[in-house]
Length: 140
Image (tube, rainbow, N blue to C red):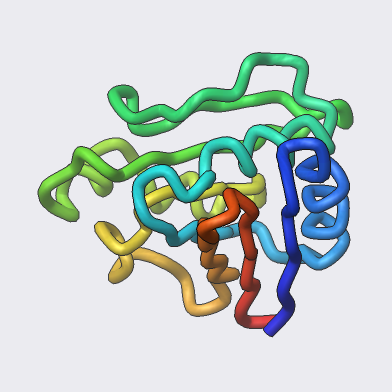
């Protein structure tokens, strides 16, 4: 397990760079954390690192947003907070995204865990009382 500390928003881009280096060849990343832990904020920093020019926001209502990285590759950002059944994820073609070879960043993965590949990188984000964050990366 690898841990990355984020002391403040000012250090989030450095944390995203460190995280990206730890990704290796992993393409499916499941972000676990309570509401307000900073999942979307961290994913936004990660997308900036990869050269995404678009505003990165949580796809809470659309379920998935697609971004274009500086190298032209797609990055898919999922938010499954509002789904109530696995069928909803299947109906949007979630499994096709997973095996597309593109980076898939998933918020609220606990809602769709049976669909996740075995090599999914599991990431837990914890908000600490001083407003700092700890990111724990499993499967490394």
